[in-house]
Image (cartoon, rainbow, N blue to C red; front, top):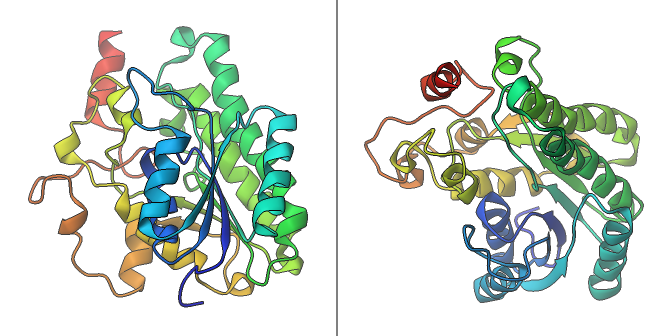
Amino acid sequence: MADLKGRTLFVTGASRGIGLAIARRAAADGANVVIAAKTTEPHPKLPGTIHTAAAEIEQAGGRALPLAVDIRDEEQVYAAVAKTVETFGGIDILVNNASAINLTGTLETPMKRFDLMWGVNARGTFLCTQACLPHLKKSPNPHVLTLSPPLNLDPRWFRLHTAYTISKYGMSLCVLGLAEEFKDDGIAINALWPRTVIATAALAMLGGITPPEKCRKPEIVADAAHVILTRDSRCCTGNFYIDEDVLRESGVTDFESYAVQPGQPLHRDLFLGEPPAELLGLRRKA
């Protein structure tokens, strides 16, 4: 496939950040995009709502369907999937982008926060994929793309934030298992993760662990997602892609345009390379 024109994407957490960037990139091709997210009214600390995202998608050239969805709620998810099919006639692509983050040690992690991360990250990914699968089976080029890291059982990725790691690896385990389960159906089920920290609202909520100038923009993940989602679904499943690697393989050689501040050294994202010194410092202070 050269582009995503006429394809229908169901994108969770698409009211801001990486999810919105992926949605805008698809919209530029003329895709139909469902914004499945919780924010319907402006948040005092976070930019964007499902309605502002819909406006951006339509301005970019796509058709938008904003739906208020808490992906922890089974009834809401299935109702949103049904509304998508009713509106656009089917679903070609699911992007499991919605995620909750809390980088705390075990003694500093309230069970309410653990439940939120597990419910949104692992359970939400499984639920949304389950709900979309019957419709994806009818698509000529079906994809599920989950924003989760490569699986790595090195203890260093657990010791600083076990609860968060468990929840994110839960998303990755969904990719591993579902790719194998549905490969004979021709559904591509893959993961995508950034090489560097991405400047999003979630980053700002973490108390300055990484300054924005050390980050890349969400557009690098969106462009990598576009490359993956336009591939033949029968030829690419069960992969744990890294954004920079995907783009290099597609011929991109200049990555400075993706930097928030070109020329600045970049911080590697969690689960790639060494844990950031800033996070180690915060834990020592705690």
